[in-house]
Length: 141
Image 1 (cartoon, rainbow, N blue to C red):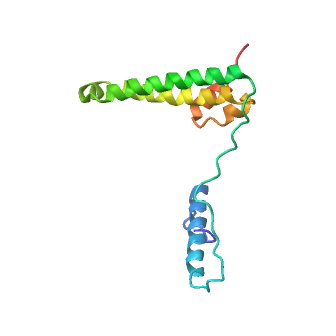
Image 2 (cartoon, one colour):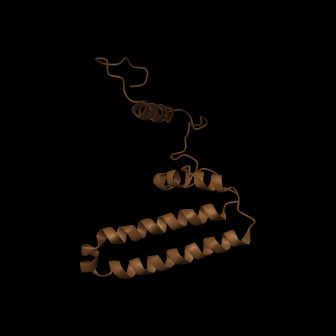
Image 3 (spheres, one colour):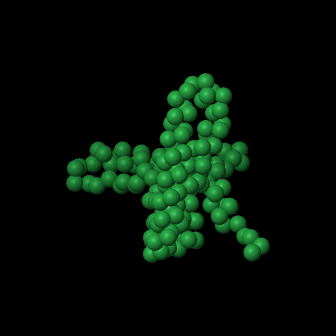
């Protein structure tokens, strides 16, 4: 749709225009495939680069706390693995077992924040939107 007029007043949303631009680029690359081998095609990465990891904290207690959180995560994994082996229990308590998995993810993110020298940068690196929002909320302290 890129470069085309809107039909009946319809304007595609930004994400659709981005997809259209990507498709146009792919088509252009396909057209270049007929070029001699000396021509180099345009290549874009499929995924965005991950954000840089925050620098590690120099405080040994931060690492010890993060290690303890990792130990708790491993124990929760073992419990979850044992519980999902029982199909009846899995059927009856699927939501609770998903809660264990969610708790594991939160503990992993918290461990990474604790290990970071710059805690604010560590919070920004959290991939769970709701957890990141909770960590960034203002308190009355």
